[in-house]
Length: 355
Ligand SMILES: [Zn+2]
Image (cartoon, rainbow, N blue to C red; front, top):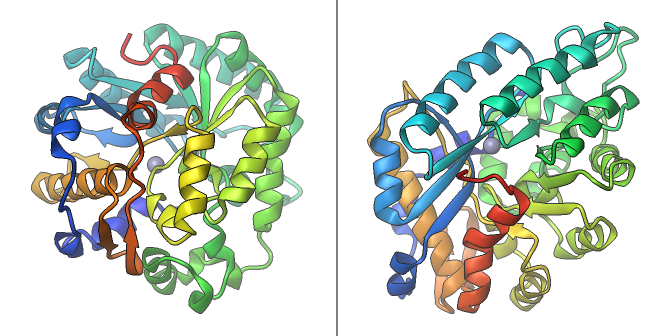
């Protein structure tokens, strides 16, 4: 699984120029310090940090993908370098390698590396969808995140009071035929990448199995703080998400690349959901910026995402998005709630943020 929603959204960036930004409540946008709690910055060039500062944003950048320690080290290089330059504007999350998973010393070695990462400043650990959808054991079974061989690692993370960010599974659309998908970016992506369209690959774990594996992890580690990336892969239903938030007090979710899934659900229901769970939701975009990317293109994309998402949460305007057919109305959330989803919740769920 190499699919990252950010790439899809990039395709739409030119269309975002069409997105309405009227009535952005720009005074409040400009006055409020905000956190984009899920980005992937793989450059040490200062441009993105300067742009974010001008927009009033700080970042949590996330190292991801568990196929090799060498790739993790490469990402860590950028994370440490940018943290050193902007200690109070960015923090970073590490991850661990699945290399030699079946060796008896695997967990001990992972813990040794995580200990070092924590000492050097990582504030949490990412687990990605390659656990559940890519890695298989020697019997050719998929390795799921509730596999007991992960237990010593999650115990170690919880004992060190660090947070796990878990991207397990995919949007439910991935298991649906193209014409049943709810948002345009999923339709486009899966039509172009049939190899990742799980509807066509019943031999892979089902959506329900993957969500259940994450739920089992939460149940087995009640002391582990876990942020479910991308609305915890329950983006399609605020009712389903509410059930998990009720069931697992150790769970919060980020909205990275999934705000459009709120926009296709019933407005009043979504508004009530956000008010009810106002302490458990973290704003994020899933920006990816690497050395080889065109910075101006990424900046334009990010600015549009930040401003159109703000219009959705802060105003009651009629809005449009390239990801969604038709128009929808903004949620006009109170300032106190905006402050929580844009700042306080990230600091609560990642307690060492910007230390
Ligand atoms: Zn991401």
